[in-house]
Length: 223
Image (cartoon, rainbow, N blue to C red):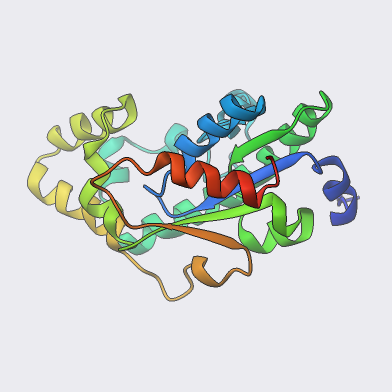
């Protein structure tokens, strides 16, 4: 028997969860942190699905999340075409969504409000949450990620740069990596028209975090 859980049951158990999804570089992780600090919420930051033990993943049931354990090396990953990389990220997002939902159900048992930087796609969020519990953060221009990606000084990006430098042709590897960030497949999510509340970040020169925080708090009815 295949286990299936009805969306209304999941929705009941996630009624104290607030979801933030959307474009990269739109401020999702920052808003999760600031909202949790201001309103005493549990913060589930970027990649919180990583709490699931890697040794419990199945290479057949979670092939996307298991890819780094099965690849021949980082050059194999860096040589993915934009189309291949997009298909892999879609696969991992679907797999992460299952883990995220289970982790959020577990955390919800505390009774505290939770705010999550989520991989759960809009079509699933429509079934398991409400309009005032979901926010979509966007960037204008939407391809700002390709220009700003390595501006952030974090361990993951530093590691990626190191692996790119180890490639036989680092310049070509970097160009291929950038092509992933600017690739727009025909079936990509139309974030602006999901039906959810959206907030667009257009100013990348000044600190707009307080304005974004106030808008999100009002939408989530936290005030």
